Image 1 (tube, rainbow, N blue to C red):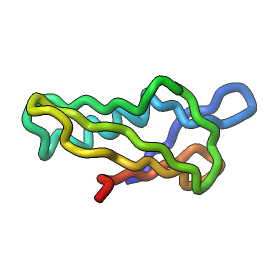
Image 2 (image 1 turned 90 degrees about the vertical axis):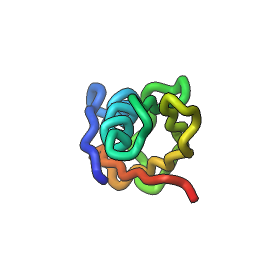
Image 3 (image 1 turned 135 degrees about the vertical axis):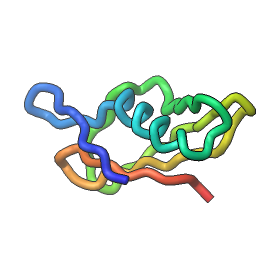
Image 4 (image 1 turned 135 degrees about the horizontal axis):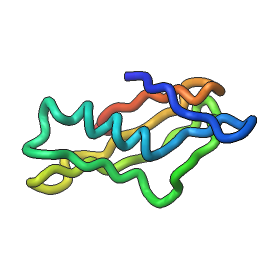
Length: 84
């Protein structure tokens, strides 16, 4: 899944809050109850193609799995998926 994210000033950054919301929406189809994504305290990340970070996905039963988020391009597009 690819998600467009916002820029800040003239530098485009990945808005982690938007990433979390997208992961939670994606998880609705398989989570037991509402899902919560936690990508850590760093709320903005540079839009550097190839860079990645890990988010944790939880539902009412606890941790479902880790989700790897990878920056696709300098425009702030990302893709994410479950970590094996």
